[in-house]
Amino acid sequence: MKQEENKDTKEKSEKKFISLLSDTTFKHFFKIEDYKEFFNTIIKPFINMDIKDFKLYDAELNSGNEKRDYHLDILLVSDLVDLVISIEMNQFPSEETKYKDRLYVYALLAKSLNSGEDIKKKKVIQINFNKEKHPYVSKGSFYLMDKVTNREIKDFEIYEVYLENYKGIRYNGDNKEEAYLSLFTANSYEELREIAGDDKEALKIVDELERLGLDDKFGLAYDNEVMQKKMINTARSWGYDDGKADGLEEGAKAKEIEIAKNFLKDGIPIDIVSRNTGLSEEELEEINKEA
Image (cartoon, rainbow, N blue to C red; front, side, top):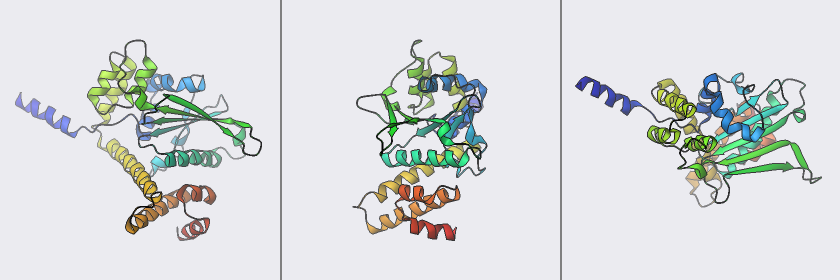
């Protein structure tokens, strides 16, 4: 009896909490057919169609390097419709990173689609799941506008989901979508189970998250993503804060250079990297030569 108790205690101490709000987690679940219905519930309202025929496009683009895979956005594509769905899981949202993510999506799409394919022929819908609260709305929609003609660009739609607005919601048998979004705000497995209630799809997600919490390899990939995103946010916040000491400014510049190197290695155009890092195109040309 005592041996079993020690085993349970050890298991609890070693189990890492894995949040649903992670690119690494999303990609894991989306590749498994059993969980498609869960994601269909939260994505279908934005695209007005079932996502069962969509697949992860970046599965073919995976670099094999877990420390860099967090750069690859979640892209869903279908052979049946001219639509690309980009999904951002923002655990640490900021205006700067949201802007960077949008530009990165467009650059990645332009680079990654089949040779000769015109990006303008595909509609792009970007959905940002943000771990933040909005004072007025739980969801927002945005459209791009041509600065010259002042006309709406119908090829792109952007949706923001403010997940903290769903915090505290529990499944009651009639609020599946809201309860599923509430799962993204949970900070413990106990809270996840409270939110899921008796919903079978949600409970399957929670069971798998607990299993992943004991998987050392998955935990390493998950931690790498969290660390890299925190690093980028810290570097950007330093870079935009004029009140920091010189040492911090130098550290921020070093981080920007590190980020820029990764972008350039991924084939992102220099002018886009420049707008996202604050480095001049001349500086980036030198960095490119040294890489």
